[in-house]
Image 1 (cartoon, rainbow, N blue to C red):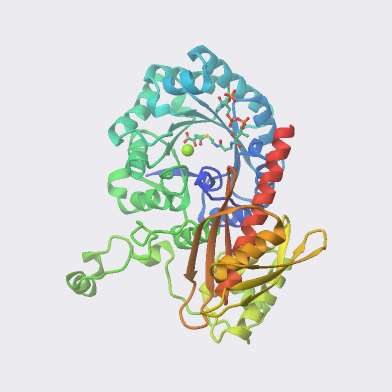
Image 2: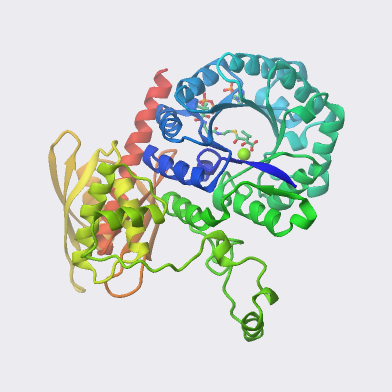
Length: 513
Ligand SMILES: CC(=O)SCCNC(=O)CCNC(=O)[C@H](O)C(C)(C)COP(=O)(O)OP(=O)(O)OC[C@H]1O[C@@H](n2cnc3c(N)ncnc32)[C@H](O)[C@@H]1OP(=O)(O)O
Ligand SMILES: CC(C)C(=O)C(=O)O
Ligand SMILES: [Mg+2]
């Protein structure tokens, strides 16, 4: 039985999902959970993309202790130097350098000949070798590359010192048979290919990412790259939990497994969904709300007689469990910390202390505090207390009647200590709050998405609001949680505005460089 290594790129390719924008603290939380899940490599970002990305990669590198931390880099000295700057404190680091190899990318995007592609790829790997012992080289758009040329590139970068050769299906174009054969061909055509790791990286544009990844494993891939919940550019990357469960369930076919702690899958999936705002469809394989639900009578009858009639995976196997630990106003710090660990958080003491205060405040508002309440509360704390908040909501008030125009007044505190009071009327309660915030912050933004959900049930349920805002080419998401949906709406909006300000600042720094 072979063990396939798992390369998680939720924090890099996953973050390339339109509108997804994780701050450093959110990335660290996800990285620590990925480590608990047991992934081999965590691609924390693309250090050269922005100072914020570099900071996030560096912080993940500092906090992660068991997995290898990776940064993406183009085949340029500057990108590789930035990756090193971000990864230099990592316990174990890997450079991920890439260059497209397909005729389409060579001609239209890079404007390079085959010779130039090889020259640049080799120079990049050699430059990376000055800092890193582990180097992954990705031949971007490999699945649309001439097989002879792909083999030539592989040989050249392996000779230059690459330790992992990745064969991405960048645009989700390949088919299982074709993709599996590319791996077989590499093993035949490239001397030394069997001594390094061969990696697959699939996108889901035609819905074949899992099938293609499994075909790659059959063809000789030793590493699978993907994301939690399959988030990522366009239709997303392969969902790692789906590959892991396919290998586990059909060991008889694939003769391969992963070192993942499958029981951590549910927790990881929920954390990624909450922090990215990417909602998991109910019918999603392995982690969807309906994945283990049986609706029709014949199925229910079968499952009651013997679960295996209609169940090929047990919910408990991937960590869906209904352990009842009652948390309430009489719970203390120790129980709270234990609960946080159970829910997958590894917070520092100062963060636990702050979260505990918020937990006690919530206990005063709610009779029963469920796991979902605590999760929502902690996530809200993580997002609203990041170090880069320009504005904080102090108060929001609303005058509303069904025959009057809603009027909102807000008080914001700016990070320089100034207090800003503004009021505005609007078409509805939320609209008037958002107009007042626009005035107070002086930002012109477009609200492109607004979603509201109830975290738990009952009259005192926590309300969760997701907004997506756009300013020019910057799109960000913000999330707010409160027992009051109007307050949650204000939190989410201000959070998104803070992200816009942060992004804009980073763009200015990059363009000044
Ligand atoms: C398949 C993938 O997922 S690849 C990863 C994609 N992820 C991202 O692009 C997110 C981060 N990207 C960014 O922030 C920006 O694109 C940056 C900072 C990296 C670069 O920004 P800019 O300098 O403004 O360049 P821009 O994005 O417009 O164009 C990319 C340039 O890189 C070149 N390039 C693309 N891939 C590579 C590569 N692997 N190696 C070297 N150069 C490359 C392009 O040809 C283009 O060069 P040109 O401007 O000379 O034509
Ligand atoms: C950078 C590479 C590996 C990538 O994400 C792709 O080709 O899809
Ligand atoms: Mg990709």
